[in-house]
Length: 85
Image (cartoon, rainbow, N blue to C red):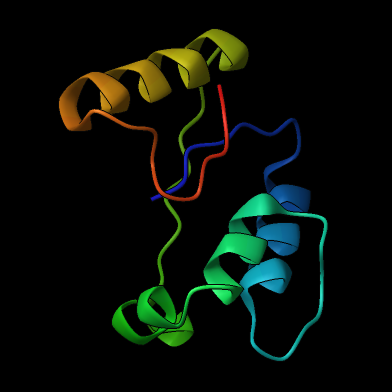
């Protein structure tokens, strides 16, 4: 699970996909770095089966913070691929 925001969905999705792809080397997205560094996560959540859900909101910074806070309240930690709020 990763919660993030973007001003350009297209650029964000392209960068995220490239960062996670086993055929591409990238260090500019924390989600991709964490994904590639965990053999357990890669085996349980194979690249070809990953999904992205996009939602549009007016106040993206506030919505991202709200989603992260809600996740943390429910599970006691941030989503696995988020580093901080």
